Image (spheres, rainbow, N blue to C red):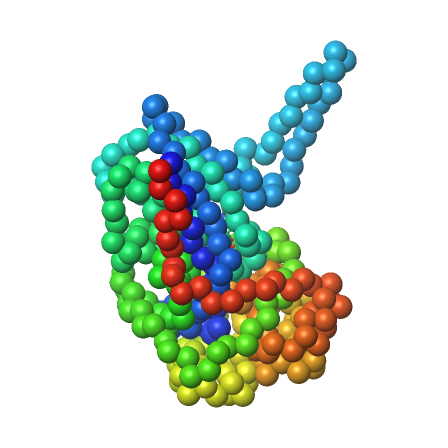
Length: 330
Ligand SMILES: Nc1ncnc2c1ncn2[C@@H]1O[C@H](COP(=O)(O)OP(=O)(O)O)[C@@H](O)[C@H]1O
Ligand SMILES: C[C@@](O)(CCOP(=O)(O)O)CC(=O)O
Ligand SMILES: [Mg+2]
């Protein structure tokens, strides 16, 4: 039986634009997805994913007291699509189909912009591989997990899967089918507060929504995407120099452009604005948007309180430097 973990991430600059080849700057956070894998004697794959919240159970109570529950199978299949694809690709890669029991647990809110889909893909592949007694190079692991995100989402950048695999702070530049990834040495510790509100839409929907706009109004959307790319490059320089003020200003502009793409919400904007008024150097949504998480560049407790007063929650997280690791193997 093998247990592995993979970290979530926050994107400091560049989400959505990175899907169109611009760079992103991201930081892995010390909140994890844990996957335990145990080989079976048959060829079945059983998945116990206790943190998925699925709406739509209908229950019939019969006269004799029997209870029959039905669930929306479409929603179940779709919620398990990342895990299912990760297992399929791991089986294909090693050309070995061994049945497996998977137990999945998340320390992060699922579907809120912290990259649980990537972390679950990375951790599932690594757990499967290790349980079979094989090894996989981290670059190969990141490539396979990126393939999972691309297959499920239709279109995905390598950002989240790179972070979940390697950890740290990275400047990521997609280059066609490969990824240039450069670890960034910050000139300063990044003070960061994460605010959270529940999200209804999935990353898949949000990426598709931006794609539709891009295709129907390319002349409007293209410059926004290229501007986000410029912000990310400048944000990296500011981080390396330790210029927190400039980092904050760039975060604010990045948020404005994400709002222009239509991926912010009223509640996210409220959290983003109160954070600034309470003294954050900058703030923006993080991840795909449509609800979910925002980040504020500060460690002021007033900012935490201001976020909570809007109805949001504050998540405490620091930097993860390890990426995915095996935490037990017996
Ligand atoms: N603990 C988990 N167990 C099973 N699947 C998970 C888990 N966490 C995430 N996923 C998969 O990832 C999806 C969320 O991914 P996404 O919409 O990209 O949001 P994010 O990656 O920001 O959390 C879930 O709907 C589910 O399919
Ligand atoms: C919007 C995007 O840039 C980041 C999505 O992150 P998340 O799944 O919301 O954590 C998509 C991608 O990079 O594939
Ligand atoms: Mg995701």
